[in-house]
Structure formats: structure tokens, C-alpha cells
Image (cartoon, rainbow, N blue to C red):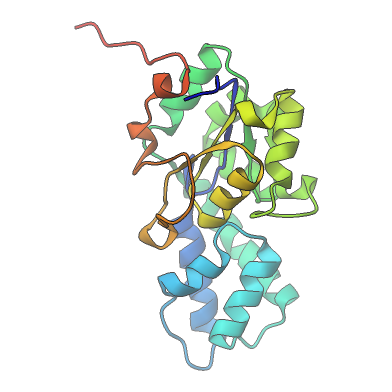
Length: 229
């Protein structure tokens, strides 16, 4: 690293919380219930909409699968179904440990999620650790006009933390999220939430399989304490 990292910004879905499987489950239910010729959602379609807005996601699914719904109707039905399953989401491996470590060592941290604030409140019902560490620095989809891969959300997070973008480290799981981090001029760690979100052509700072594989000192951050047994 040629620059000192002074702040860390996290995506949430598929990065801190394992919600992508829930989104896929609900999206597939829409296809099954409202398409004349239902079929499985593949990685090709998911690449087109994961990490973007609800409007874009539903537009893609309606067009790709011929759903007999308007975008507004699809968003409403999807939201209702998602809010029933969001409280069941689990934390991703290594996520709690890293966030707690950074918070403990007074490294400025924030979330930058395309999800609405209302949905975030439901997802975090059983994840108080995210509120405790980043609740005051939580940027949601409601707070921005232009969504990923546009860099607006990350630039807003950096502004809230009062840190220059070049000194920020972004963690993202989706292709669109990684593009947004890069477009913001930030060091960006790609942690793909699935094979359909793995793209080696992206110019991310690093790609790792799990947050558990992240080495803080590689990015001028305080290293984890070693267990003394």
C-alpha cells in the first residue's frame, strides 16, 4: 500500500449479512408465480441486477422472465415477501470480528447500502453489533439519487466520515458495488457473494473469498490480536 487507510466503508447485503440467498429465493418465487413459462434464475440474469436499485432489479426480472406485473407491482410484492424473511439473515463469516476490531481501534467506519432504511431496520433486528458500531454512519439507498455503480453513495459515506476518498477502503461483494468503489477513487476489496459476482477483469485492489481472509496490516490498519494460548 502506498497510501495510509484512514477509514473503512462496508456494503451490507452479501458482505456483512448473508441476505443474497433470501433475495434469490424471493425473486425466484416471483418468477414462479407470475411468469407464464417459469424457469430458474441463472447467474447471467443475476449479474444484470445484483447490487442495483429495486426498480432496476424488477425491470430486469420482468423483461427477462415475462412477468405479468408492472415494476411498481413487482416491487410491492417483493418487498412484502422479503420483509418476512429478512429477520432470519445470518452474519457473514469474519464480518463481526472485523467490524468489532476496527471499532475497538477507533478506525472510522460506515455502511453504504442500496437497501432502504426501513429494510435495514428489519435486517438488523438480530444484529445489534452493526448498529452499535456504525448506526450513526449508515448510508442507505434513500439518501442518494444515483445508485451503484455510480460512486455517489461511497462519496457520501466518506464525506460523513470526513475522510478523503483516496484514504478509504471499501468492502463490496457485487460487481456493481465494486465498480462504484473504484469509481469513487477508493481502494476496493472484492469479496464475491457468489460465482455470478466474481469478475477478475475488475480493477479492484484485491479479491478475497471471505472477510476471514482479510489481513488488516496489509492496508496499514491495526493487526488482529494474536490468541495467546
